[in-house]
Length: 266
Image (cartoon, rainbow, N blue to C red; front, side, top):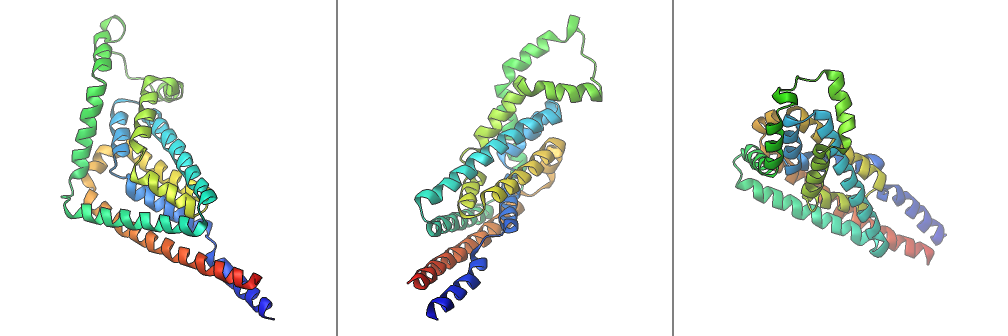
């Protein structure tokens, strides 16, 4: 009788402790969206798209972010193999709470114009890096010193796919990958994958990256001049805190469920 009651109680609590795919998707999508808008990777894609085909730049940036997302989610999935799910959940909660507090603290000293300043800094770095290559292209001046004519839409579309092995694509991929490595969004993805569902976290993160990359290559300069990085940081800070408290509650739920399971088995 007691064992049956314990089992029924355990079964009643089990669905509450199980993560839904929608929750994992929304959490990862929201974290990426609020972390990447106005980030360095955002401005790298925006500036490269001003000088090169947008589809080419988007494919390079998004490919790098997809690789980074899958790598980060895989690292997060490995963690529960060495640490119990309860402690993985608690570590994720602590990380979110720390990130949330840090973002709100940083927002106190922001003026709201950090996006434009960050874009100028990234532009200066890219100009300095590409100075030698730009000089070679300028000296060539096209065939017989003539300025090349503007390619048609079909030609640009073809060049975008042919250019996947071009220096521009490789540069965009490498710059985006390196800028994202060790970033707050990467650590958040690792923590989410360890606490939530791997596939839904990956899909949500990639969807967020796709939107941010598309916005960057289509209208990055306009977005940089109109968005308030301070507002995004404040909203992101509260979002991280909310996810942190949610993860902490789920961690305590896992602990209570474990005790009930042991009691039922006894």
